[in-house]
Image 1: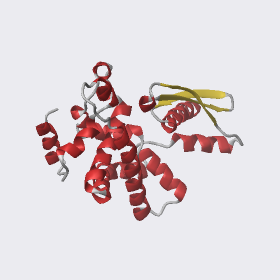
Image 2: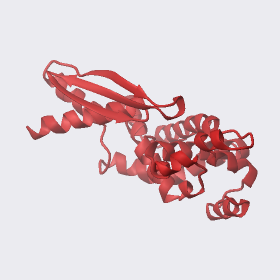
Image 3: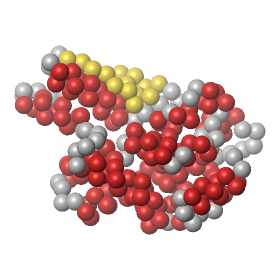
Image 4: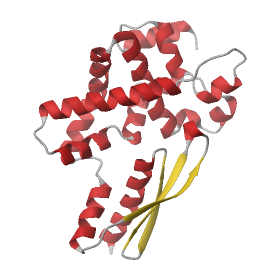
Length: 227
């Protein structure tokens, strides 16, 4: 990736940030592990950006919608979920600038949902460090406000854990979630969670435990609804 490439990205997104500050956000650990020169991956920026994204969305929801704590939490969990952040990354074409190791590239890492969502968070982390919270939050909201509106209007993603819980409570039961597998390196784990309700069992996978739980709940909820 030439510096001019990132300069064009910065100009396209109308960001006041230096190329050097942004570059590390695009160093995936697989690339760093294969690089001849010492580099730092985007994992620390991802950690920071995750917190900034959650705060920006939480602050916006709190200030603009009179919902209960539980409802706000549900909306936030959907908006900052791996699928949505991955979609925003692809819309912005950030994955085209990503440095990947040869093996990860060949394995389709440039389109892998977990890598894309991590990249979005690392990108936000870089903006936060260089420009401060206000600018970073403005960027986050420019990407996620429409997603919030869709979730609130009920036209998109659903919180299947809550829906399954409501079914269980109506029967005097509760769903039981169990993590049955976690594989991969620390920065790239894939979790498998099993949910059981009244003898029915379904599993789901995800980059985060909560995403795996949602997938498992979705499968079981849809199975119950179809019977």
